[in-house]
Length: 296
Image 1 (spheres, rainbow, N blue to C red):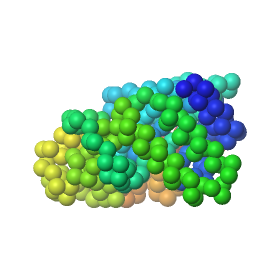
Image 2: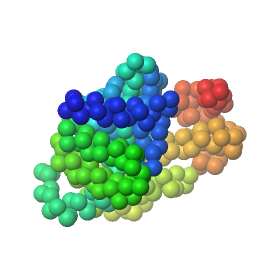
Image 3: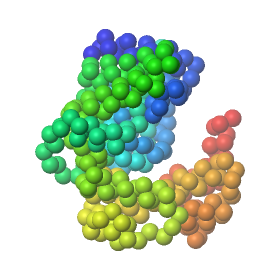
């Protein structure tokens, strides 16, 4: 395990020299490097597996903290608002990590094709979880990164290696979580469909009964499972989407405070400013000015 991890760390270090993020020609893969601890960053985490090969990182989802490093990977099984930060890194030993976006349809196909037995039924839990990294998983990622030295092979071999990674995850100690989200008709899969709807219609008024019916759940069951998986209610999730889109619009110079509020579905700019300040810790104008200053 340690030897495989060191080899992968050398490969990641080579491809990220002088960069904080490297997006290779391999679809759905991103590679990261940081040479010091970072402040918590609010972001939407896509369904993905995050593998750390050097250093330590943590994610905060609601009140839950997930710490992952060379021994532990992080699975995010559906789109989740979270706070992420690097907790262990230095110029001598930078944080090095890889994130592979999960193809849930491909995972469902593997479950059917390999006739994998379903895990025991489990109550709904958070959509984010830490699992134990195995040598087989590290070696599969190593083969994926090795393709960067033979780019002509990427279209043929990358999908095969990614399917192997999905298989390793399904067979891991946290495979049951992925089964829940990849199985069509499961409660987790229905919540994922609701999240997709919210992402596309965040600016519209939200009626919980209508959204629950859209994903074929009762309102009470929908609300319970949504909160269990995401650590927030559907209305809080919608608010998070609205405020982060407004932040993006203002930072890009596409809207001022009032117009951003209206564009994302707020009827009252004062209510927008209050909720924005609660989420980001500063008024919209001050927050955006601080972000722009940090980009200079």
